[in-house]
Every structure is written in C-alpha cells, then in structure tokens.
Length: 212
Image (tube, rainbow, N blue to C red; front, side, top):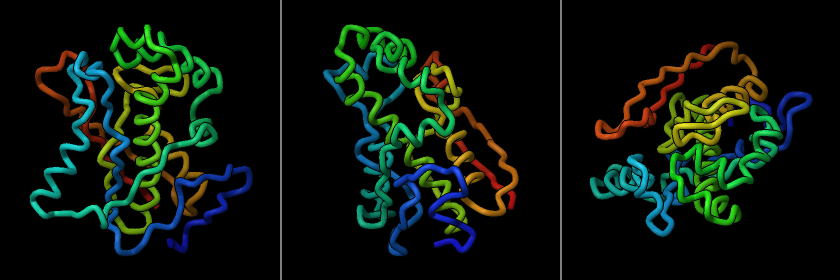
C-alpha cells in the first residue's frame, strides 16, 4: 500500500471499494470480462468495436505476455463513486433508454426496457470506469498502470455522447486529488486513436501524467 494513500479518504470522502488492496503478485493491468458489450448483435450497429477489450487480453494471453492470475479484476463504479463528478440529474437521465441510445449512437436501444440497457450496456461502461479509477491508484503505488478499457473523453459531468456515458478520466483524477496526499496537478494526453473506418471520434487510448 502506498504510504501517501489514506484508504479512508480525506474528510468528506465517501466509502468506495475501488481503492481496495491489490496483491503484489498482480501486474498493474486492470480488466474485466464485463467490459465487453454483447447483446443480440446490437453492438454491431455501431462502428465502435464493443468487444475489443477482450480481444486485446486474448492476444496478450496467446502471446504469453500475461495470464489471468496477474490481471487486476476491475470493479463496477457505484452510484456514490460516479457522483464524485456526475450530477444526480444526469445519472437519473440514464434511466431512460432513449438517453442511452443517443449517447451510444445505437438507436434500437430506445425500444429496450431500461433494466436491460443498464445490465447489458451501462454496467460494462461503469465497470470500465471503475477500472480507470483503480488504475489511477495503482499508478501511484507501482509507478505505472493500464486500464484496458475506459477513455470516455466525450462525457462531462452532466452530458454524455460519442459512446461515452461516464467521465472516467475526470473521476480517476478527482479520486486521486481527494484521497492521495501530495497529488497537485494532472495532465491528460488524449491521443484520440480510433478506428479509421469509423465516422465517430471514439477514443481508444488515454494517458495520464501526475505531478507530485
């Protein structure tokens, strides 16, 4: 555990499971099979590859760079976690399938009951968001960290878009500011590297530098 980190958070910080202790045997690589969005083929209606995260992990395992045992399993960001940046009004709007269909640019989602949209679309995005927050902590502990998912740079506190429903980068930084002593500044380097065939500016890679 980092000596600079207070797991209880500073005064006023909420309780979270995202800053849990990670075994030293794990690499600071965060992932969960929950990242991948598959539901009745609807994910294929968008140029964004909603299963690319699993493909990356599968390639790394096939090339024997990693095994399941060394991966840090991502946890889903809770509503309390999300409220660190997002407004309650915005999170409530995500309970409407039409809103999620607009954000993800998959129109047929508006015809699905929201409980299915929550489970099959938003839960994977919340898990990726939790992974980004966890990677921020790991970067402080280990000197580097990677979240295989995340990078939702089109989302703000009260508005989503471009397949981005949660502002994971902003959340990761806010968590560090509130919970890790000595973090004073953060620089976001947005590479915006996305599929060439896609007309949508979907980010695949984000990098973050922290100044202590």
